[in-house]
Image 1 (cartoon, rainbow, N blue to C red):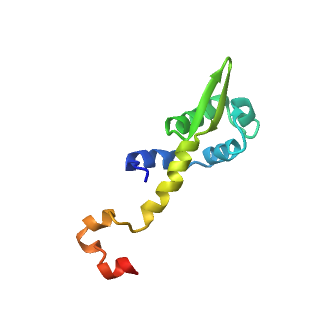
Image 2: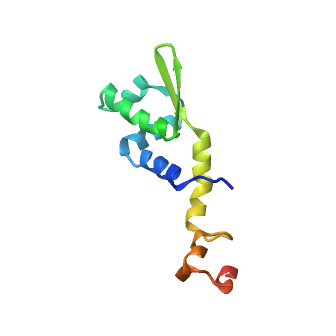
Image 3: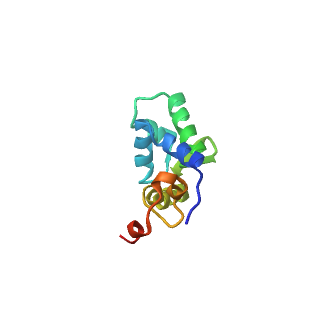
Length: 114
């Protein structure tokens, strides 16, 4: 089971909460791309794209690799694997569920078996 802090999850979700950044993630899901490739699909300035890429990189959602004058961007597979593993943990009851710490939300033994 992957352990990720709420702070880390919030950073990731904030990075993914923008339409432009989601579009960039979708583009990168096919292949790594350079900034010029990404810019060709948007009506953005280079500085605006850099702003979005910085947010994605700082959140660990996208990797960047500098090669001379070019920077290539790709999906950070490890982050997305962690997200896919963590999401079910957020909304399903489990043996060591955080709701067991909340007085009025304790699940009875009968409800656990159901």
